[in-house]
Amino acid sequence: MTNTARGRRSADGDKEKKHPLASLSNPTHLRVFLTATVLAVAYLGFYSPLSSQFDRSRQEFDAQLRRFVVISDIERLREQYKLFKGRLSPKPDANEWVHYLLDGVRQYPLKVSMLDPDKVRDVGPYKAVVLRVDLEGSLADIHKFINWLETNERLIRIDALSIQPIRNKNGALMASFTIVGMMG
Image (cartoon, rainbow, N blue to C red):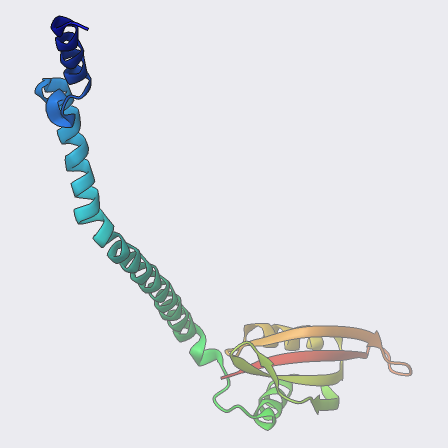
């Protein structure tokens, strides 16, 4: 082999063994390299350490948002409670309800055949008394009593009503009520 052939080979070998950063003399390659380097440094230097803080902050924000929703609901319910607080019985006592109902019946010419209070029930956050009442009287008087129940200042609901004629009495009716009264 001649020196010129050896020289060519070594020159070709030098071309093949270029330095890795030698291609950065090209401005396009340099821009790509610098952009990739800046992005890698930004990701590893800023985002990676902060990502756990972002996650923790997001969880805290979600927890605070849930607390805010609950607090808003409680405030809304308190405002609604203020609207009807005066319509609840002042004492959580079934006997007080019996007296209140008897005072209402006395306003009309009705005869109480039966007045039986059941035990106090829980209705949501409130207590409710259930009264079973049988009244005798005319249809007009029973109607007036029902109007009194519907329009009085307390929260009362008629759960069941049954009206039947009474034998051996002309025009007299027997009205059987199941009344639920709300207590505070």
